[in-house]
Length: 426
Length: 176
Image (cartoon, rainbow over all chains, first blue to last red):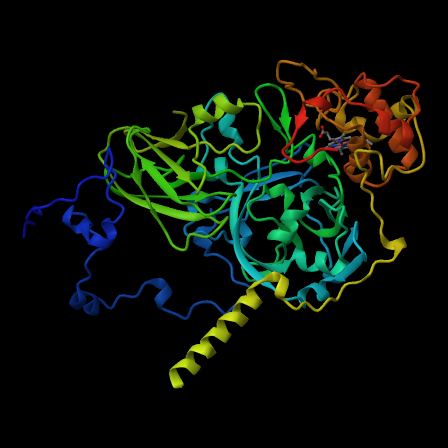
């Protein structure tokens, strides 16, 4: 039976086939002649008694620690690089294009280490609070776990994330290859303020130097105010104890701050009147500007978004309906809005933000799209309460291309006529 | 009255909920034990030189330390290694320092002592004596044209070394 054209077809919400983000809710897809799921004929399926191989005998045994399906073996961290001659001094990235929702599976959380992953026995690690305090203290891991715990979902982002897009030519990488130094987890731990209050902060104190127990003894100076505000000593990630590569048995977690400051394998908090000016806050993680001056202690990660699907190196299988979906986040607070363009930035439509929209967390956005099969360019732009994600041209005009850290400009994906997708600068 | 008692009970429940969600109001078990002075073990070297240990060394002895302990990864000249470039680059007042080294980019010499003692040599961090660290730091500063070859660095001398790019760093936080 031929369907009658609806009297009132749903209007496009922006150029090049972007549909209204409320399309799902209104049942409008059917009116566009888009089949949502195949209709199963009940009588046929009862007659057909053929069993697939996995239905002919009991499946495998129960297990101790679950693993992803063997058919998902290709979903692994990507872009793994380490300094020449080393195995653990580098980074690996979250395959953002293969994931949905907002929580990163712990085993796919990005990594950035400066001297490998130490293997630390929890009974042998002691966390000390020292320096400008009334009473220097030490805590065993068992002691820490007895404090009132707090659970919060936060993103972590390396401040060098996305910097490959500062290069002269767009790198032909996946979304994870470009932006995969961001991940999000549910973290459970003890607010740092509890331990600082217990030790008693001297009135001259302004900073806290956090030091890790890795071979590099990686250290960063953190403003005391941040430590007292929302800093967490994380013991659990997504419900289980931290993974070794995320700082087992305890890491610092600084919501919204560049990832390097959330020191892993934490064993020391040194309260001080001045910053230490460690290598990681001078030689590295400083923002070189166009005029040759460099800014220190630029902690908050700027507002950013990227379309994870469809995205770089994926393939569209023909014209028609697709859901555009991606992630947005800001180190300054909750994401307020994400717009998507399918015509290279000429027109924009508001994407749907999936609840809950959490402070300093990843927010999933979605918008339905009808691809007409012609080449086009997809973009997303996010905003928080105060800040708007810049275009690449705006970013490089203001900051140049040598800064490396805190690059947060819009990502553009070019869709070719054959459905191929690649990174592009607009 | 039944209704007003109901209201009072609700109000109490709200008050106690607020107290729990306020970190300052949380009862903590206060399990920290006193850290004894001999357990402090800080190796932080501060930009004013505080934390620098006794000991000394100069570029002449530092060249030997470098050849044995660093050269394999950082190169004969400090410019041609497989890992980070330690020597060279230009502090240019108007254009970007492209190559960022101790000489052309780092703002504080104290950070170099701190980092080498903390993290280098990469495979055996902590294996150098404080004299050897002073010496190899002196060598790297000499190769970068910051100090003379025969200057013996100790805590007092190193605190006085000014790196050429220092003035080009700024921050919204107060810098020492």
